[in-house]
Length: 346
Image (spheres, rainbow, N blue to C red):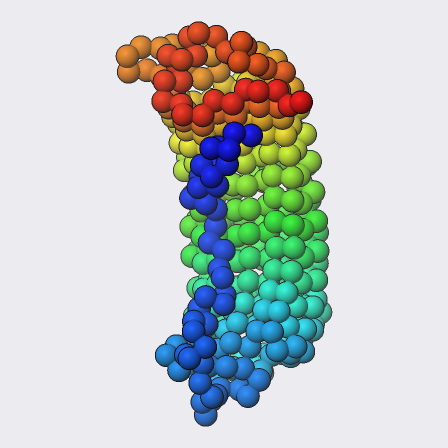
């Protein structure tokens, strides 16, 4: 890979990746942490200059301390939590963020109905635990749900019913199957971001809301794309299906020729030809497939002074192509491209 390409790719990925919170950042300088106030549990720390936050992370806690009234941000990651009881949240009427990453939580140890009663909850993170099913029911106020690197094998339909404010769902790193998520995202009219990568999906999620802009399904077992899949998602801009089992026979003509797409990642599959894409596409990743022909028609149906591809980054390295495989007319079609990589893998 070109050394100049790496940081550029990193920037592109950073622009469309979900927010990854550095929880320690919110803790701020140590001078902000004073002795516990009258309402702050002795197991935790409450910043003097950030009184609405309660830091209980990295305390080897086995249960959740009682959350006092007025706390909006609760950090419980990196503990040994094995249970969550409703009594800890009786006064947590203002709670907006609840971070439970890196604990030992199982479904049977979380008292039912806890999260539904948190009437101000916006973000729930339960990454790196031992859940086999999603927690629920959830508060109708939520806008972000992360349950990554658990043991989810199914996400029952109706779990997210009524969560009309939910914009982001991250479920990567589980054991979800296509049947296991059937109907799971129906009715989420505000959903913009969905990550189901690193699961066991045999096909792309169906029945997605039309509001979806980013769909990541890398590292699954997907072998085909429904013909009208992208056309049914009029806001879709970023689609990643890298590291799957896609072959030419599984991609109908024009399946990716939609004007809204900005980025399409089909790398590390079994494609032998370049699929047809829309002229508005800006980033196309096809590295490490079995492509042996550079077909300009896949990018430009016809070329004029004002009709040409808007592609800026095209990766075809790791295929059966060399620089000599690129026809002369490609320069006119791809006149905006700053990176065109076609070198084969050694």
